[in-house]
Image 1: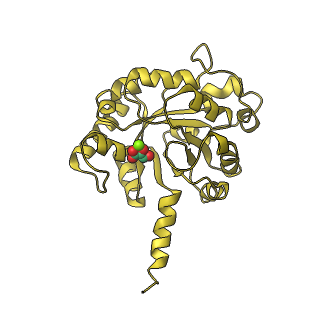
Image 2 (image 1 turned 120 degrees about the vertical axis):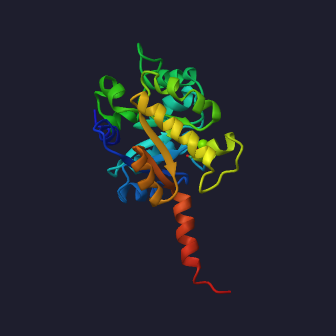
Length: 251
Ligand code: 3PY
Ligand code: MG
């Protein structure tokens, strides 16, 4: 099966730095991949994408060196299994709050006997190869989002769940769950919760991940021990560049 370069980097102890794509444009997804990110995550939770347009979005990422990942809209077998069937090389599952939630994620990713995924990788096999069944557990990346107060409380148990490769912190939802509006920089209580999750990941020997919104924060989080880092998404990049360009407009 085609190697998952992002998973291999993480397994080897290195960082993987990628981004998200929220617009439904294959052109944009391809551009993100071409620019050198380790992974591009097609976002089905927020933004324009859905199962109906996912196949061409994944095709666009797949012609670059970036690993194609999908953030599913919810922890439901239909989303996780269909994203993988269409060629996602890993899933990022939002709002995982309990070890039972984590076990459900693994059951959707893994074929029996380890899980309950149904066979039918229509495009997954085109991208992954004819030995998809034999290699799927090894190559597909399983990431759970810890982004609620309950998720922080249960972080160690969630990360101890067999089959979970990494956690990914959503700082905005985490702030909201802890009683703050989404904001940058994050309030100290949110930073404390982030540090708690990172410690839990370290204790569980799992990879810690987080979404960041400035290149400087990539450096900061790497120094803290995070290794699976997403920087920005296409709309934020576009708006920042557009705002910078529009500064020339004086009236
Ligand atoms: C959050 O910040 O809540 C996220 O989900 C970022 O991806
Ligand atoms: Mg979130």
